Image (cartoon, rainbow, N blue to C red; front, side, top):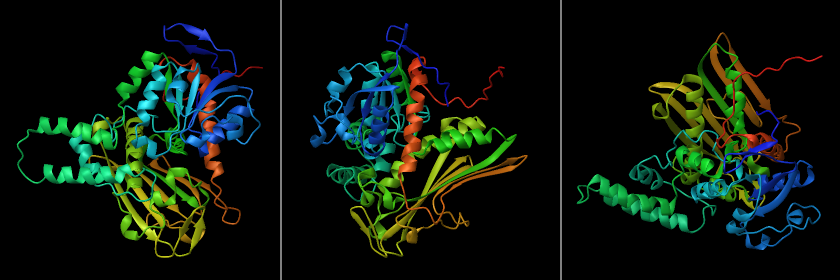
Amino acid sequence: MYLNTGRVRHTTNGEEAVVARPYRLIIWGPGDMGGRALRTALASPDFEVVGVKVFSPHKHGKDIGELAGLAPVGITATTSKAEILALKADCVVHTPTTPSLVQGADADVLDLLESGKNVVSAASYHNPAMPTWLSESRSPLEVLRTVAQMRVTGGAFGPQLPKALSALKTVMRVVDSGPLRFTAPVLERLAAPVVDRAIPRRATGERLQAACLRGGVSLHGTGLHPGLMVEQLLLRLAGLLDEVREVKFLEVGDLSAAPDGMWGGLASLGFGMPLSAVDSDHAIALMQHFYFDAVLANVAHTLFGARAEEVRVERHVYPVPARTRVRAGGSVIEPGTVGAIHMSYRGYLGDRLFMTNAECWHVGPGNAHLGPDHPRSLAGGHVITLDGSPARIEMRNELDDESYEGDWSAVTDISVKAMLDVIPELCAAPAGVATPDLSPRYRLETA
């Protein structure tokens, strides 16, 4: 992705200063992915972990080595954001949970950047110039209408979100009930604080870029794992074709081995719930949508030169009943409840379909479902398809039916490696938002 040279970083006064290895790291959120990053960094001579931001009170004050299942290292984790901001560090490995992205994670990233720390994030900062339905660039009333339809299951978003959504639905009924005394600008001003208290809108690319410049540092998002499959692999394959007409990406995943803490548990995704609880307005459908808004717009921009406002993304989400009873961690999926979820995000330029991104998640092999769009069997993995000229390209990353046991660690390891590998170059980069360079690179052969 980047040349691994990184011995220089830009300071707040614009001067370049040599950074002697190891790189001083902060791990923000040592859950499944962050915990794996913490263990890898502690074991590597290339990194020195100087701080860990935790969110569970029982982890506060714990030795970070013990948190990672290793020997004590003499540094304790903290729940204090102020303590983390005060640390001197080269880079922050930011691994937010999906719920945190609608609970103000962008504000944390802005503060980290302005404090003079480079940030590499597992969140969707791979091309923040592309606005999403939850972006600050969207009208508050437009966002309010979308959020008011959100359906929540499980407890991933805490007890306050269902209450807030109920209030938002009431507000929208009043707004849409007929003529009001307020003009549209007044309604927009009233809606903005209501929306941002319930679900803070995502920061625009301009705000993130400004924070980078103020701190003299850089931001890079690898994408939610394994988001780099589209952001890098698919787009690099497209470079082999003279013309690309349409692209497809399919992910098939068995979540039975996913940690209970991921996304707040399977119930928060809708698994094990009545079929009526999951549709295109379920929380996971909307959370995936603001991510794929950016993903598909990035593809449209890279392959077709489209502007963000020219891209339309439609979501189509439906549940599939479980055929077998499955116990997965702390969840039990009963036959007839939601055992699989099929999510499609289709990108259009006008009436032209240029990309389909499909996620087929299930719990337990006996509940796998691909749907009519994917007639070929796939136990788990990914399929990238590019239709164009002079050829059609298909790449399959498939798990063997006989050996596959729903192991989630490989996906996490890929993501952690992508984050840690970019740190040297990110620390050396000029201040600003850093995105992948997909142009061909060559080196001279040396004897």
